[in-house]
Image (cartoon, rainbow, N blue to C red; front, side, top):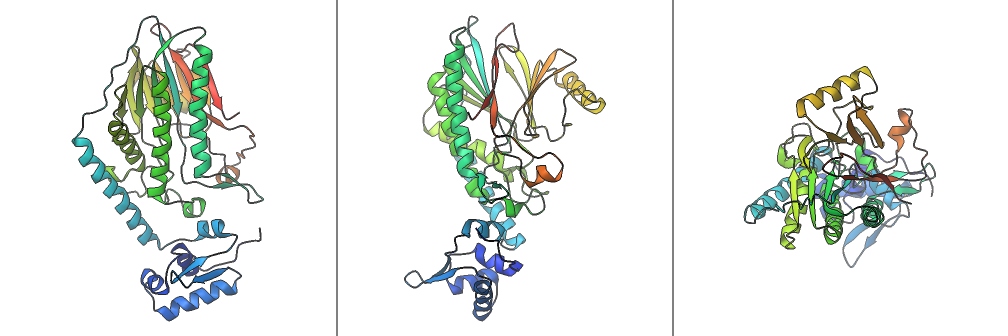
Length: 386
């Protein structure tokens, strides 16, 4: 695949609106039709294959490099931000109205003293992100993210079968650490690293999680979903709570499960913070996305101060955190386990720039572990895609 042409901002903006008629392009770009023709000719002069569909009266991108060209194309920032927020706020309003008319999902845990709870945890799915190799091969996109969640669901079923040789499980607790949709303006230039805008990101993430919850609900007596918001949920610094894409994913999931009539599921979401305190078989469990924590847990003076402080404040017996995309298991003061979650998304150019290149060939997807009344952790398995 040849190198991409050096397009001007307005030329990239025009591509972002394709396919479209000349009049629609003129309106979207707020320029005269003759100016649109000039932009179009300049794009074609730079070797981009633009073609006209007479039957549809639309110009379209026929270039073999279309996926890459679309990723470097961008609407005017104000236009795109406004459209994204309008979509999210409209979805929020619609879901809230519908959820208020239905009974909440509040299945009670079984917690048989002779059984264990199965915990499945994942996060940082970043639906919408695209990661490519130096040669241009796409190694992570929305299809890959969906497949990662599907693989995680199957691994959970498999691990349950294996561990059931030694114990019996009644309940499953699915813990989701946020950053489900990746956003579009979280960092400078992010628009070039995504393949879809917010509505598509939210829809794909919610559908994948719905399939995961249904899979777990078929093999456990009850499933209890616990979710927190990630730092990619807010697409602008001044965004209100209703503009949080993670929250929309959770509410879409909640709404879909209610309409499916599932009676063995409960959902608990931290709607206004990046952490959640919950309980599993009598143990206090603290869940936080982790963007406000140090990279390491209780290994440096700063991280020891943070995690020991949070343990005192939240009185947790067990904690989970994400954000850093690296799996781990640490113990605060050698007593309180903290499980760090991986991300199925490979490290891209950002990881390379900060001196942490991702050379892995196996993608870690999440964690599965057991909890019983007398032990915070029984078995523990780091789940990968192999």
